[in-house]
Length: 127
Length: 216
Image (cartoon, rainbow over all chains, first blue to last red):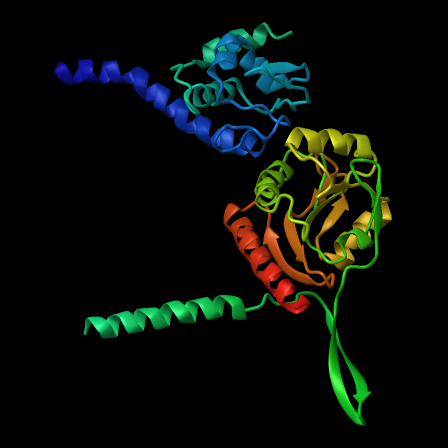
């Protein structure tokens, strides 16, 4: 009985860990060239992912940005970034969710799990 | 016994010091032997490949030629500003080289854009500024299609070409090429690999020592 409860409790954390590990691989393949292995970006060419304020405030937009790219100017830590981030429409919802989990729990961020069902909702609301 | 150990150690230290200054970087590229006659004797000289004269516009729309690199060692590469594959990694690494040799009058960096159509000087300026590069120690240059692709293939031995099957239409290698004051190739390093770029910086120090010794 104790074992069953234990395993139930751990299921969320196992899902989270699976997302995180897969997200790391996807990040390395799709994001790391520009944003860097340490998430620090590059000059003002590519914005950092180390600032948790922007990521928290724009959490519901992240899926749309990853899928469709972004060209509007954004401000992070009082620094303006203006450039075209290319979108990636080959990534499935689950891939995007895993990338978001990795980014929002790395580089000094600690936001916990983000599920693919939430990503699907966010994507449905893309402008 | 202890004394002996100290002597052995100091010999080792001295040895390693002399080794460091003695080894020279190889001269890379094509070469051909040329015979000439000195004092009635025939001797054979080796002619090494050198970088041909060039002229491009830099990020300030100023004409930059090979003359601006006279008496300097430099590192050359090929990139384009909208490239999101290897270029960000290359220039993240090149930025380390730039910071290490910043304001050293004997060192320059030369990045050729292979996106002839879009990377006009104004766009190169924006790119350089965003990267955090000021002044003209690091030149970002725009040239004609032929001049850029020819100098890449024939002089720097770097593969760069237009390819319609590539998502971005341009394919190129990420080599950093080290050139000495005689415009000879002295090293080629994978600009996407941090350990090779570290080697490049060590080799640049070595080459600067060699050039300084030649000046004396």
